[in-house]
Length: 488
Image (cartoon, rainbow, N blue to C red):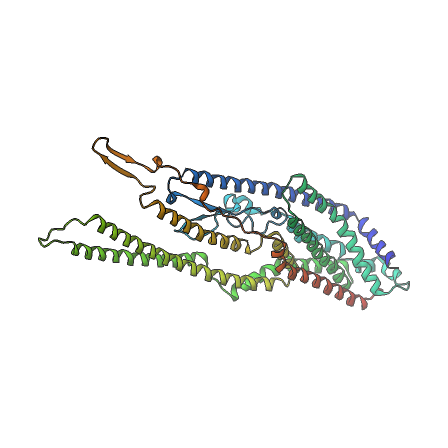
């Protein structure tokens, strides 16, 4: 009897006029989104390779270690084809030097703001918005629609258990909607292969898990439609309720959680933190220059001769004074950098606490659970910026230590203008261009942090478990509601 009821539900879905239109729309959207994602990924790879090439050319032409200008570029991930997440919102590179802290700049959306207006439609967006809405459209009248047609009374004129009937509704709806959707998903995967996108075994594992999570999310809305249909007697009422539920779960709750977290745990803006750093830096440099003037006055007094005329300071003494001033200047810069680092660390920790609260509140919605799971699997989650900046910050320490060591080996005059006076050859002026280029092969190279399935599984399992719980609760509600449903 269960198989008969499932076949009946399958025929009702497949023979429905809206099934063909829905299938075609979903197929076109998925294939188009993956194709556009492939093009964007290839452009990102070209930008990444071009940036690295410019850095290599600049370091090969440098004549002193002090003149090297290095940038660390964030490597693109093939999974951004399916889940763009925050990939296009954060910067692509950061300058690496002793004077400034690490900060990712030049995001794709900042370079091309037109794309930020309409955003990127990827696989996760289609599942989150389009497929969830289609699931409700097919199941909002699963029970009360048969009651209005009179077929529900005919079914229960036979000895059919209610539990078996509601189970057949859920299974039949799931088979009728999920299996056809798997076809465009497989075609999308084939499209990735045809374009030769470098997918490693870990990428395939993450993609397969993403598809499983999408099916789990889709399943919830299928069962939710059956639940709402079991709670109402009119299909028009259940449609309105299902639409309201979709709006609440997909659009309202995720954003409400973020807003609530911002009110509960306020975090200072980046501009406020930068203002504090600039104010501290201004005060410290003012103190430094005042102290430096006082030191030179004292040195001038010590070098005065008895006749009151200033005697010329010996070269060695002058060089010692310059080294002392340079050491004091470096100490001030280190103090400013340390203050900047502490403020940014505090800001990062407060933001992390706010993000954890926001995600915890928004996970009340299955849409948030799926979106967070998809972004975790793709590596384009909220931690993408922090993950890269922390790795770049570690590299910055290594890089600055290397440059300082090389500058000490080269001496203070390396890379500077030189003036030589010879009685036979006359005066000759040397510029940095006349000096030999440095050995750029010794320069340390930044490597983007690795990210794999094991990293994503830490948070993915929580969100995937929530999706399963939501589906089980919805099925339990549909079962309990239909036990008391009036089939007349």
